[in-house]
Image (cartoon, rainbow, N blue to C red; front, side, top):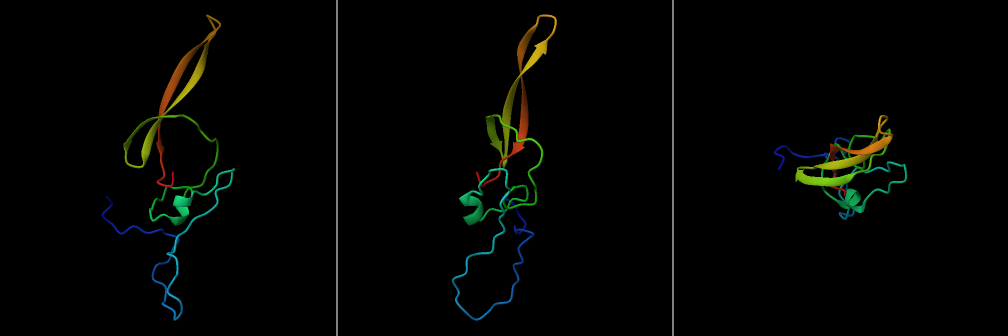
Length: 110
């Protein structure tokens, strides 16, 4: 869907050709993001280009890790998740259910 030539900014594509075996795997930048997350096989072997992917792109994982339930998957590389929480009301000494919808990036690695 993108019109421009897609490439990873960390990979140099115009390398000099050397005499030798031709069975080189394509150049691809992947990294281990830590925090107990394994790099998916699709990120290592895939051909997608996503600058917002934590495994192949230029973003770092920091702060809190959010969890939620997927509501919609209609956008390109973006999903809407629902986060439920309880809000305390002092007058009635009870909690009420509330929720927030968040748009979050969905990497093609997943």
